[in-house]
Every structure is written in structure tokens, then in C-alpha cells.
Image 1 (cartoon, rainbow, N blue to C red):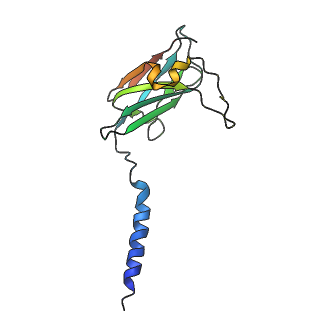
Image 2: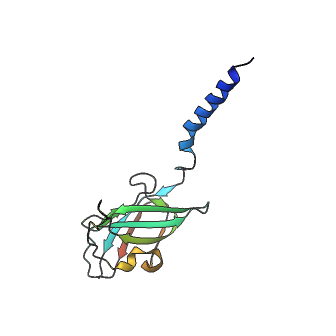
Image 3: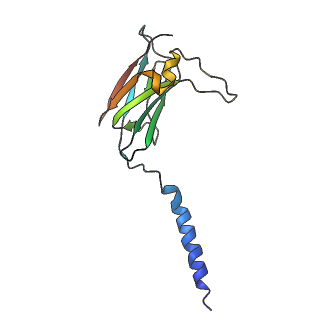
Length: 141
């Protein structure tokens, strides 16, 4: 009777489980640095909130990059790692305020509500290889 075969399957299972977290998370896709500023129609910076870019990858998957809007209106996008930027290509853009732990909005946005939805924001930007510096000009509330 050969008892080593069941242990061989157990070992194979352990190895496959160890490799599972690496599958489906392709960080080899090239990102390009994206920074910029969110500016109101009157020229003052948007204070707080989140900017989110979305595009479709070559594989047909929706890929999003986001960044926190600082008090001076500046932001830096991250897709897979902090500050890595966004994928090359055309992106739709939204802006919103994050919710606090109790579900309430933690920062009162100083931009129109239309910017919270990809279909109504009207914001589109192309990301190119290399450094990308973007100014997002908004309408005042």
C-alpha cells in the first residue's frame, strides 16, 4: 500500500493556496504619474474630497485610480500602489466627499453634485506616458 500519494496532493494543495493571492492582481500593467489641482470657477482651490479616474484596460476590465484632494486643491493619483498614477488612455472623472464612520459626509464639498456621477460630470482626461499634470476646472455651487 502506497501512503505517500495523499501527502503529495496535500503538498500540491498547500502550494496552490500560497500562489492564489498572486493570481488576478496584475501589477505589471504600466501606470503613469498623475498629479494636479481641482479649481473652482472663481479660481479658488477645491478644499477636500476625493477625485476618481476610471478607464477600461486592454483586457476590458474597468480600472480606477483615485487621490485625496488636499486643502490647496492638489491631488496625486494611485491605482495599485500609493502615488503610482493611472493607466494610459482616456479617463472619465468624478469627485466626491468621503463618508465618516457613522455614514455622514465628513467634508462638505465645495463643488456641484453633478461631479459625483461619471454620466453627469462631463470631466474627461487623457493620460499619456510620462508625467501628467492636470487642472480640473469646476463650476461653483
